[in-house]
Image 1: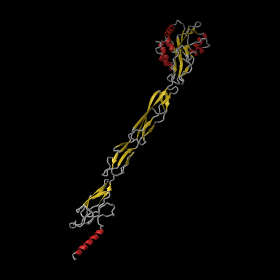
Image 2 (image 1 turned 90 degrees about the vertical axis):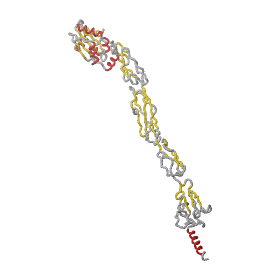
Image 3 (image 1 turned 30 degrees about the vertical axis):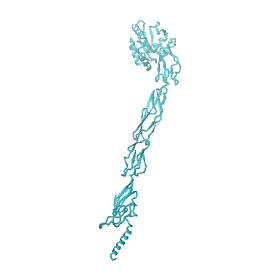
Image 4 (image 1 turned 135 degrees about the vertical axis):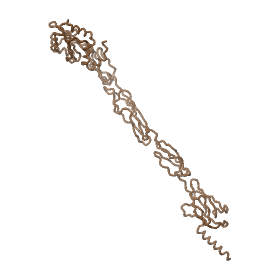
Length: 461
């Protein structure tokens, strides 16, 4: 009986100790329900496994503890039991992977299962993504871009067991050109007396398929409001977006010229026309060759109906009226029509006179081209003769002409009168037709006559 007292005291002491530790080393007030406390084993004598000593049963939330006890399967939380800790898929073990039940009735380490999460994916410029399970394990995130952008890189990423996303972050690239629409074809008629038309149009409609920003729009061709000549003209616009993708469009400017039928010059005459000669608004003036005068409309106009106004005149031989009252009345018939070359000699047998008349008779064609009429004053009164071709002048007219133009009877001389009745050149000796024509062509021809001379240069050959 005396030997049993110390043993009873030891049993009561251990019973009190067991109540203090609640029978295990698991503390329910900890943050994680599946956390296992660590307590280093104190230096103690060799363990005695014959008397069961229990730790608190392990319960790992979202995990599992696989335990092996020295006393067999029914003593899974007894002294010396070793447990291998693991977590369910989608969770990562934090702490000790293996713990042992110590004599202090606490497990030798702590651990818990933390849910595996990947970091939140950053936003994609000009795009977005959608995930099947947020940032959790096995979550699939599919990327897409805004209209007008193209995805470059991985289209889908998955949250892996190591807490990282598969693949790499893609980008949205603007590779689609902007949309551009040019105006419709423009057709215009040339303005009166012109071969051009002023054409206006609105700028093209441009829209970027991505961010809506148009960097630059350039025009290849004339600006709106320009003068366009007859024919078709291609106008092209080119647009660039912020990514320097380009798009272009074009349209046609078509200018037409209303034209009348080409007029034919009258017989023994020619035409002098403005503009191109037969376009809308052009005016054509009818002119007659030397020795002929016009009868009918002096000019005609090409109308918008593509018909000429009036009717075509004719050129008839010029009629000279010598039955006038004065020399001025005679000269007025030639005003702006003909030039006069007055040849004077004291006698028809004068050598200079005969030479000059012979040369002029051989140059009749050249004289007509230059609108030159020969007027002869030959002899002495009362037998003096004045004539224009076959027309004879009266003595009074001859005398007035000599006084008005200061033409002497005593010697051979010539006076060249222009179309305005002005004395332009005098000769006291015969001159060749070439010399006479050179002077007229150089000093007396109007611009219209120069053009006509160019067209009739070889007419007398």
